[in-house]
Image (cartoon, rainbow, N blue to C red; front, side, top):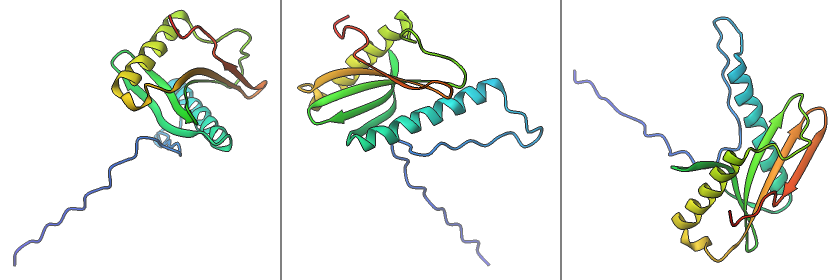
Length: 150
């Protein structure tokens, strides 16, 4: 008797993920500090995406990666293209802008790379936003935290 092999092809994943999946290590049930930070970051990004959808923004990309940097969320509302950085903390406060100059340059370079890679957005207005989420202190939104022309 011949063996019949069949393979099921999985559907390619979309570029944006709406739900965070986390599988803890079941051997010792300890979550490492790094995994906890990643989980908190995923939850923060997910909450910001939910908020942006209530504001009628279209989520174009989540975790857009380029050779020069990463942008957490790229969204669009009308003719405005918004590059969003999400900072999530369990205990911390965000008194100042929580992004270093190095991160700022990386985000701006990634935004420029995005615009050159996607010429259909070349005529859009550009905005940068930082969403700071803290369990103790709530949400703080910083719009256009730095000059876009750096």
